[in-house]
Length: 186
Image (cartoon, rainbow, N blue to C red; front, side):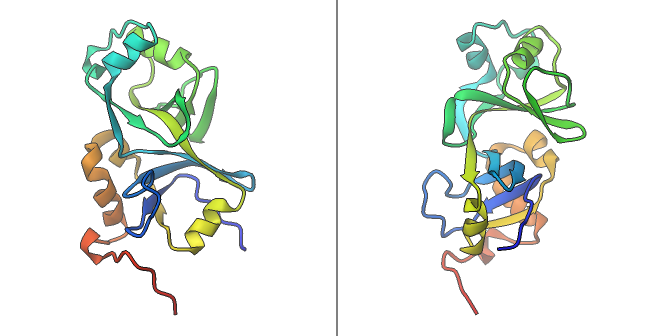
């Protein structure tokens, strides 16, 4: 199987996706290499807001404009751990540079900075992430489980969660009504 790099891509679950965790999921792939892939589901709000999260981690939230921002279910792996996708990249204890100006941080210092009124200008916070072992995602792609497209980060930071899936399809020029829940092979 040829090596593909899906880093900085959106994975759009096909209607035939049987796994309820990923049905109608839009995943932003943060890293994909020969060891596997990891990303965060960006269209599954948990019903928790930033104010509640900050109370749970015992940090005062001085950036009141963020109080009602949603926290997301990022995927089924490490659901007790926070993953902060943010711009700008910054300098935090545990950050993976996704792009020159975009990072994924798992250390609490980024939340402490936000709580104190600073931190990244834009952030998306999830609990958990989506992960694939080496070759697993490539296999799912070969089985038509996912569509992929270059990610438009503005979809994550600027659109409401319920609009992100169809907006990502729009990046491919696809309308949801065009998709079938059965795969065809020539």
